[in-house]
Length: 399
Image 1 (cartoon, one colour):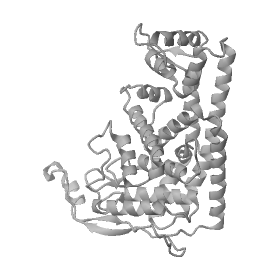
Image 2 (image 1 turned 45 degrees about the vertical axis):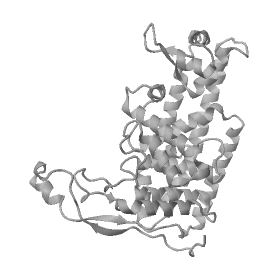
Image 3 (image 1 turned 180 degrees about the vertical axis):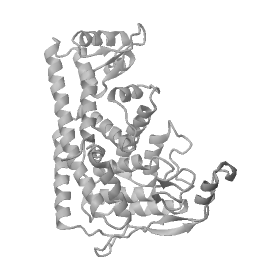
Image 4 (image 1 turned 90 degrees about the vertical axis):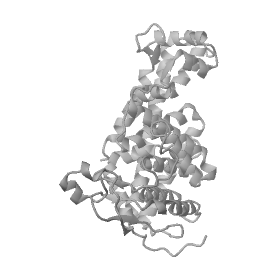
């Protein structure tokens, strides 16, 4: 592919679109009928496959520094991959969901992974875990169908009617659900979506751009297209993770970039707005700085988990081959268990799993929290507290 000379990035233009309200006119107030009538201005998004961004030397330096941190973090954990890959992937999914104001504690997320549907937010976060897994499974074939598969994994449980389908109607950000006329951003018409996604895929296959900058711009263009009725932000950040791996910045683990974005979500959204105005610098800078923050926070989480594991060893006296010791490793990635999930993880019967659970309860590593005589469940609170503290750190503004 031959790219154009470095130039300013195309800004989003506008086109007038006739409005066909979904809410019956008689259900609206007079003021609402006056506000939400007539044509509206939807985004007219330019293709980017042949565009090359103009990056300042300072931004090149930031991108290179962040990329080096990512690859070093990934390489250092490669030698002891399990269970940290699972923990970091789940942490990224939870942080990405929290950007959309979907938050839940680590214990509730773990329960949802075992099938609980008691907390909707936790269930949606588990859907995001599935989307991240789908994204990473498709890194060798990132195309339009791969993006659809990510969205299907994200939405299939709580919104199956839209899961894995390009939108056919208008979508907008901000304003009212009644109509788009006072929205902060109105995405391009649905008829433009397939062509814009094909162009985006062509851009992802470029080999002449700094990888992290290419990833940031892909993410911003995806969010500008907004190809689905819902779940665009979470799908776009799953795509970001897939590109980190497909472009070789990661090989072993998920770097929780969304946790880095959480340190300044307002700045992240402003950067997306700037991108739509033709300025690529803020979003590239936001993703690079988020990656740096993610490595720092992720490294601290891993250090906390290692310390917990060492403390557990000092609290129990087990043979090196004891199944309870194997269960400790399981708890690092799966901090809530019942007899069935423990048995499955250890490859044994439920009765034998109960014998592995008992010494960990006696040592205070596992706490039974249902109070039931049957269908009992246990939580490794040291782990859930470490995960919750990781989430709290992500919410703190960088100084």
